[in-house]
Length: 359
Image (cartoon, rainbow, N blue to C red; front, side, top):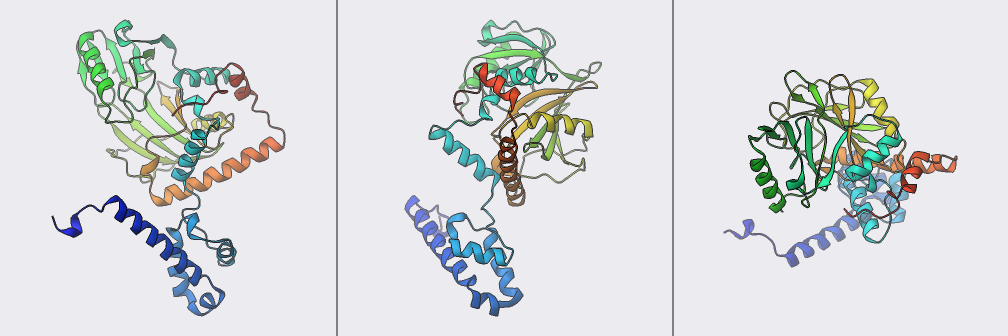
């Protein structure tokens, strides 16, 4: 294999990163000096903007921040959605409590949404090993711990069961149970079921006559504001569409491996309902997953740390990093003005939000 195509060793990568960081720091420091800025003109400012767009906090010094402010420039990666996700993960590792994370537990999320008196699927069976489940028509089977649609089954009849992720159909209970065991053995995906504990809930349909399952609407929310909504139609196969907070169709905000289609869009009243829910959570970000059923919007689950956070485009990562920072600031201001987050505090008092949630 030619040397140019060979993978660098860990030591070579570290050396490359250190040299690049030092070069970036020196170059930005030079380009931001008053003399160079004064003499460089617009071409110089454009080159400076291009460098700052990919710069990180460790590439600047305090005096450089003052000079950037004079030019109305900023550190491109100074605010990052993925960076915020990583930062909160580190806080949790150090022993901190992250208010949004306990809601990721499906039962806890249902308890919280019940306190808000919002519609959700009825719980048909408490978590149990798959072998102990009584698969009832009209039920959805989900893993207690896991994310995504892998391991999620729609039970239309005893001999008509569909795996949501890929549309696989099963004509017997034994076939489904065997498939569930293969999912438990699969450790290649972060979205696989974590252990042999499953629960059942009411199936939400958008068309009962044709048995079409509900459309998934994933609202990426920042304490009362929505960045975008992903609409996922899983019938007859999985197709996606994306919407702005104003209800306009947008290009995919990230590199999702998704088949695009023209979806149904989102209603303003649905946006307002989701915003109200997000304002009850003392945490800057929450993806609130909803189901569009037959004439109703039904709560699905809370996702405080989406597995797809890393696929956002750089522009969306920066935009949502800004939304995170401003949402955190709004929470602080609301708390200083006396907001109590009474529903969340009741949730904590019931023994849910007080403990660290392992993610």
